[in-house]
Amino acid sequence: MSWKDNIIKQLGRLNPRLLASVEKGMRAIPGVSQMIEGEYAEIMVELESSAKPYKNKFTSFTQIPDTGRSHTDILRDMEAMRAQEESHWKEGFVSGAVYHGDQEHIDFLNQVYAINSQSNPLHADVWPSATKFEAEIVAMTGNMLGGAGRDVCGTLSSGGTESIMLAMKTYRDWAREKKGITKPEMIAPITAHAAFDKASQYFNIKTIHIPVDENFRADVNAAKKAITANTIAIVGSAPSFPHGAIDPIEELSEFARQHNIGFHVDACLGGFVLPWAEKLGYPVPPFDFRLPGVTSMSADTHKYGYAAKGTSVILYRGEELRHFQYYTSTEWPGGLYFSPTFAGSRPGALSAACWAALTAIGAEGYLTATKKILETAAVIKNGIREIPELRVLGDPLFVVAFDSESLNIYKVLDYMSHKKWSLNGLHKPTCVHLCVTLRHTQPGVAERFLADLREAVEHVKQYPEEKGTMAPVYGMAATLPLRGMVSDLLKKYLDLIFKA
Ligand SMILES: *Cc1c(COP(=O)(O)O)cnc(C)c1O
Image 1 (tube, rainbow, N blue to C red):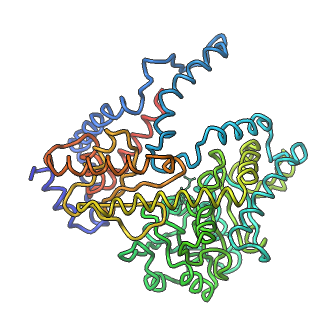
Image 2 (tube, rainbow, N blue to C red; image 1 turned 45 degrees about the vertical axis):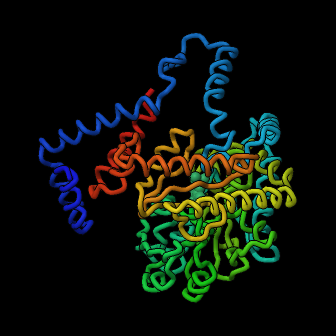
Image 3 (cartoon, helix red, strand yellow; image 1 turned 180 degrees about the vertical axis):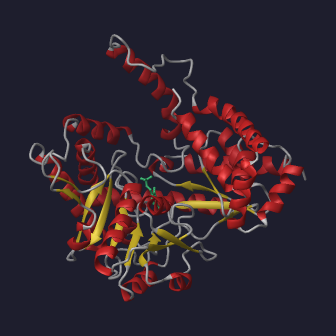
C-alpha cells in the first residue's frame, strides 16, 4: 500500500464531522494547499482533452464576431458535430439520456418546435395555445397517475430537478404557514435523487437521510424514527435512479398521512413506465395518487414521456398545496407579475412538443414501448445474472445495476467505455447501471451489450492489475474520505466545462 492509500485508509476511520475539520485544518497549511492545487491542475489537464474534443477542429469564439457568420457555415459545423456524436446514442450505446430517438419521432417533434418556436407561456394572452398545451399535459399526466376523479393538479416545469425543487419549496412554505415550522426537515432515502439535496441546500431544509434495505428500498422503520415536530415531508422514489428500486410507497404514504406531513413520490423516471407496466401485468406495487397519503409527484415527460428535453410535470393533491408553489408580485413597477415555476419566460415550443408527443404516441404507443423496454431489460438482467462474476442489485424492472464481489467493477466499466458504451458508474455501494430505453430495444443491441460485458469481465479477470483510464479516478472519488477535495474537483470540472 502506498503512503497516500494508507493515509486515505486511516482518515476513512474518522467520523465525518471530525474529518471535515481535519481537512479544513490541513488545507490551511500553505504547503498542503499548494500541493493539492498542483494535483488538481494535473487532473484537469488530463480531463480537458476529453471534455473539449473540438478545440482545434472548429472555429471558436470568445467575442461576438464583427460580421455575422453565414448560415451555411454555422449549419455545416453543427452537422459535422452531430455526425461525430449521433451514432453513439442512436445505436444504443448510452444508458438513459435519449429515451425514444427514432428518426421519425425526432423529425415530428422538430416540426412541432418550428411551428411554435416564438411561443412563451408567460404571455398567456399572446399564446393561448401554450396554456392549452400545458394544462392538458398536466391533466393527462395526472389522470395517468391515479388522479382521475381525485383533486389532482400541477404545473409544467423544465425537468425533474425543477419539479422536485418546486415540491420541496412548496412543502417548506406550506409548513411555515400551516404549522409554523421555521426549521424545516425532510426525510429522504439515501437513494433519492440528488435534486432533493439540492433543494435542501437552496431552500434551507435539513435532510434526514434514511438507509435502504438489501433490495435498495427505503427502510420504513428508519423513516418512522426520523420524524420530528419539524418534519415537513417524506420522499420516496418509484423507482430510484441508482438501482431502479421502488420504495415501499404504500407504507410511507400511510405513515405520512397519519402524521399530516407531505409525501412526495419521485416518479421522474418511472412515471411514464409504471402505469403501462401495471397494465401489461408486471408486478407494480401501488405508487401514485390512488394512495391517499401521496400529496405530490414528479414525472418526467422528457424521459419516458418521449418529449424533447426540457419538460417535466409536478403534480399536487389539491389546489391549496399548489398555491404554495406560485410566485406573485403586486408591487413591482413592471406591473402585476406572477409565475408558476422558477423561470419567468419559458419555451412554449417545448410545451407544444411535449403535448404533441403525448397525443401522437397515445396509450397504445406507450404500452408497446413499455413492453419492448421491459422485455429488453429482462434479457439484459438475466444475461448479467448468468455471468458468475457479476451480481444484479435487487430485482429491477428497467434500470439494471450490477456489481462484482471478485472484480473491480470500475475496471469493467472502463473496458465497456473502450467498447463505446456510456454506462453510469455509481458508488455507495460501488456498482454500474444501464437504464434501458427504446434505443436498446433495437435488434441485436441487448445481445451486443451482453457479449461486450462478458468480454469485459474476462479481460478484467485476466489482467486484474491493469490500471485502466477512468477506473482510478472513479475509485478515488468513491473512496477518498476527504469529500471537500472531491467537491472541489467537481467544481473545477464545471469551470473546465465553461472554459471557451
Ligand atoms: C432523472 C431523474 C431526476 C432528475 O431529473 P432531471 O430531468 O435530470 O432534472 C429525478 N429523479 C429521478 C428518479 C430521476 O431519474
